[in-house]
Image 1 (cartoon, each protein chain N blue to C red):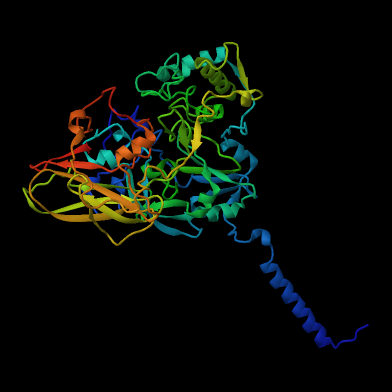
Image 2: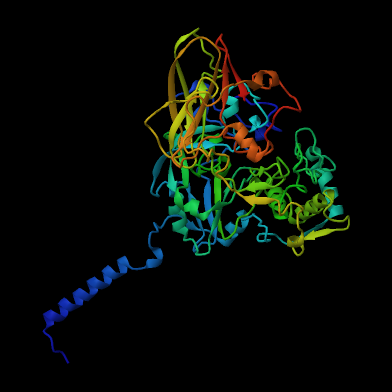
Amino acid sequence: MLKFPRATILTLALLIATMMVVALATSAPANAGKLGLGTKATSKQIKAWDIDVRPDGQGLPNGHGSVADGERIFLVKCALCHGEFGEGSGRWPVLAGGADSLDSENPVKTVGSYWPYLSTAFDYIHRAMPFGDAQSLKPNETYAILAYLLNMNDIVEDDFVLSKKNFTSVKMPNADGFIDDPRPDARNIKKRKPCMKNCKKNVKITKRARIVDVTPDKEKNDATSPKID
Amino acid sequence: MRRSVEWLTATRESSINFTPLHALDGIITPNGLCFERHHSGVAEVNPLDHRLMINGLVDKPLIFSMEDLYRFPRENRIYFLECAANSGMEWRGAQLNGAQFTHGMIHCVQYTGVPLKYILQEAGIKTNAKWIMPEGGDAAGMNRSVPMAKALDDCLLAFKMNGEALRPEQGYPLRLVVPGWEGNMWVKWLRRIEVGDKPWHTREETSKYTDLMENGKSRRFTWVMDCKSVITSPSPQAPLNHKKGHTLLTGIAWSGRGRVSRVDVTIDGGKNWHAAKVDPLSLPMAMHRFYYEFEWDGKPLLLQSRAIDETGYIQPTKDELRAVRGTNSIYHNNGIQTWHVRANGEVENVEIS
């Protein structure tokens, strides 16, 4: 039964409609702060680029490879730079050896002696190697090369087969060799104010660059020159 | 002209070069003089084809074109970028005779870009997301792990440096900016950011960019660049050409933890220190320029600079650093640099007692 005058009903309807429009425009909290830019990535697109592998095994593709297979592939695709036994050729990195050398004066850091996780090697080899032909290795090939690398570093036996299934069970020798950044360190915390006057009695020169003489304005190709990897 | 140092790296495709610090002034490094290194040559990327993907622990995985990125809110920031291996060759002694080589893996430019937080917000990060993994689109596909707190704090997706497009060797068309943290994390030719709940322990944060201590243990996730300074002139490549008299000394100082609040200079090997004049343009995590004037009596000098940042951290000597870290840590050598000035004006890189 209509109790109100027509005008009031119209006004009310208009008011409700306005409120609804206003409500629609300002609601949808799920899109708060979003600008509506970019396009949704399809699972196909993601699969094509999502190549990373984590220490807990996330990202590992299906596959497997034996030490023997790995040796065959390594000799063809890797040995030219890394040496047949991962000993490094010329300036290319050494991959095997260096066990128990980390606290010596000349530590040798290799996949076996230094890298904490095997997943790092899978991730890196697949994304960046061989140098000049990155991301060309199939999953089985990467597993095989890794198995050979482990064997070269005396971590697995000759008959070992590496696969997605047993991957996370492989523990690297230096897995416990890392601590989180404790800095700041080495600062002069004893003295709030650093010395300004008469701070030392005598000063003498203890080292000089001229004697070492490896500055890049000369032609040099010395194995003992400092280098960056 | 960009020259490669043949013996410094295995090949040219993974080479490095050095900013000519001795020849510069102010705090802005001209684009063509910025040092850089790469791991698979300088990628040539067509900006029309380039895409940035955000995937992983997000509500909606997204792909952005450069045009999309240009429509986000934009900021301009002046930041230094220093390689963690800067001065790395100097751990064992005074080796390279020039500030360009001892300290030249650093530059400072104005970046224009989108704060990363807007991009992550667009995709919607899930509550258990704690890390991001930026990944490059070059042949090396270089990847690192960055904690979410830093990603949301001040990281930028930069597409311009000093007003113009990024140089190809600096990551054209897109690079990540991680203020105050080691240069390797500032991924170039950025193609993807994955969002996750754990770090990836990539090659560049395990095999490399970890600091081996004397006891055989290594520090990891050593991200921040400690406060550091160096006198750029006089230096071996900038000898003194006058016999004696009024002399101006200049250098740069920086800190990954904020502003540099003070720089002290000594000309007698640390017997006496003097406060240098630091240019008033002082920005957090940017280069600072300092000057010191003195009357040179023409006799040999031993020059050093020592910077202090706003956290109170004082730049240590190389001996103080070595006492804590040994000599095999490769990275994060921010020790005080000594130049020996001879009576004839020549300058040499030395270490002193």
